[in-house]
Amino acid sequence: MRPTVVLIAILGVLPIAHAEQNETPADAKRHYELGMARFNLREFKAAIPEFEAAYRIVPDPVFLFNIAQAYRLDDQADQAVYFYRAYLRARPDAPNRAEVDERIATLGAIVAARPKPTTPPKPATPPKPATPPKPPETMPERRIERAPVDPIAAPRAQPVAAASELAPVNRGRAKTIAGITLLGVGAASVGAAIGLQILANQTADTFNQPKPDQVYDSALDRRGQAYQNASIALFAVGGAAIVVGGVLIIVSRRMHHESARVSLAVPSDEGMHAAAR
Image (cartoon, rainbow, N blue to C red; front, top):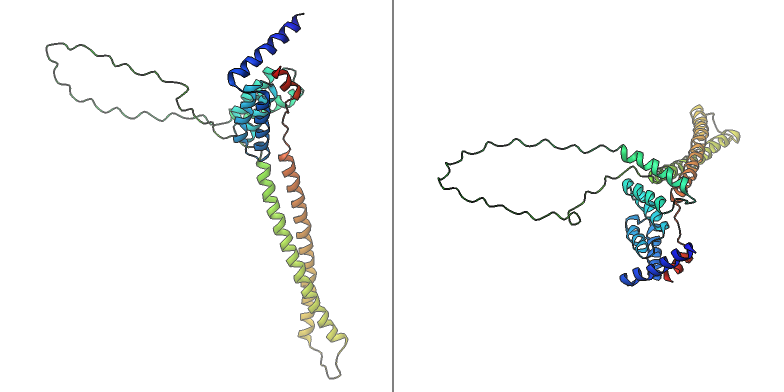
């Protein structure tokens, strides 16, 4: 009987909250889809407000996980840690709890390793000017009332950017550029080797099929041998450059796929419908 009463109470409160905000679960789904579009375009900062708007309408814990993922990839480690913990508080039996705990430990170490800001030394206080003698009559002291500081309106300090987990993407790009460069060098070397081999063959044909009045030319023979040796060396260098360049490109592609493989939680349609009842 008690679970039925709790469920009825929850289903009765949710429509009231939606009526106050004049938004429905369909609006939450729209915000979620906009957030996913931003996330897939790597616009993580723009995806966060959409996930937050969806959570305000339908407080599904998976939105907290998505917000934490976007903060993590936007290099805001402290915010990511907060929303990962909020997700586990809202859903202690989360199926990906081990993964989330590992994220919290890794990002917590990054936040702890940041250098703490040092307070600058206070400037030297200038000497006070000589005060004139007070008049005999005492003046009433006036108290100046200062306006209270609004903590919400006061500017908040932006968190320092943490070490990004997308660094493999930059290293992957470097490997791609190096691989393409090596492929170009290898192709050029192989092309030069083919040209030298043609010259060596032509020189060899001169000696293998001599003309009746031809005289042995030792300089031409040495030049043909030099063409042959240079062609072999360029074939070896070019082949090695092509192999290494191809390996670098394959490794960079794998690093790119690994960095882009980020899991996001998807809110269930049943949760959306339950909130609308």
